Length: 623
Image (cartoon, rainbow, N blue to C red):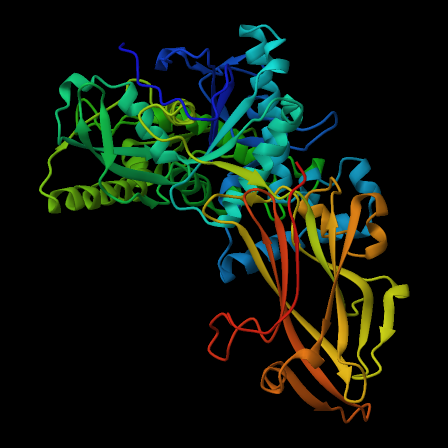
């Protein structure tokens, strides 16, 4: 294969590792390369294929279990009796209100196990995942993946090179993914790989984000016989993953002296991945064929070993896992092209002991086996296939409207395409490198007097507000930025926080807002548990005092942010002052705090960009 053009960016200072991480809903793949300064070739890219416990595969399942002792089981290394957490990627986006309520219900379902008898956890009667957030689970999983990647590099290169050369990470994500999901994935992947590879101790390294369809496209273009493509030809890249199907169309802008494609449509995406088929099989097909009684027995298998709730996570119980694993080869082999269309090829699955003991041919249960036909499989595939075809039709329509023609392009090894494409993007092959991202250098919180709540505050924090008579908690920290949060060249962190202070009509108009910067090593979720000022040690804490004086505000401005209150309960008269603090973290790690008088929004819900500036503070990142 011909060598590919290599755009050497200004940050290239010699050999460096580039690791592409394709964390998928159902499977995860990783590829890597050690650059030498010469033009790289696609075949130089290494794909991790040796997964515990000795599985030679291009990808490993995106699954983890906390059942048993000795640390989590993950990937192919999960036992049959374990509670398996899967499809965690689909829990990362901000949920709709309905999804949030359902997640809350699921989280509360096992609460009695955790809250009322902690000893059960030590006896392995409470599953470890019940105390884990989706971010915790993703970090735990990716740490295991990172260990395997490190070992793969050590097996193929001198171990010393890991201590000498910088390591760039390219993390892929779906085309349409919200900031919350990207931030969680970025935090988990960077924390896992930085910890395992000790990246902080290496020369400057970069963490980049790339969309899955773009990474897939880069590898497709580098691994395809481009002699069949001419200038102005178009092709559609379809990345059919476990959770989403992403598509993007390209036009060949030049062939000689180097192949150069350009994107001609926006990326289109839909949730038509293979999890749709799996859910149909597990939740609809099995219930219909087994009947409610036998299906209930299937779900109950293994529950004598502990609670059967997944909490907020998607889990498979023992019976589901057995059936799921036996179904996968049938799903992967299905083509919907039988040799004789009048025939129905049976696909029998052995049922677990005690399930389907009585023959029921009308439901496909014969001699302890469940028979699946091609028609059954077609019904399972229909929604995913139809949804994908509709997305392809949309792309073809967009291309046709530009009076361009489409050619079919298919790679020979599609499974590692996204991970290898991520490496190519990190190298700048056929494209500009994705811009490097940075991490917020501190946890940033604001000290506020919140309304007292027994479940959230200590009794010593309680005091009664003399102006409105409300019980409040002193020294409470509201965290607004977590150390390690994603900062991109296009999206700096900018958080607005509403602050309300009360001042007596005859008292001073001056006040103070305290902001905490902490270098504490806890994650963002753990920091939410440290919401008292005393929880943060002085050695990791810097306190910023933003002093303000409302007396300096012109009368017109003061009327816009102050409201006179005559409290009937306490008999007090005071001014209720509404302010907002904007916390900003730049790509370079610079932090600014801008305290302004007035609401964060106007009466119509639009951002209030005016507001009288009361205090300002800035901190450049210490290099």
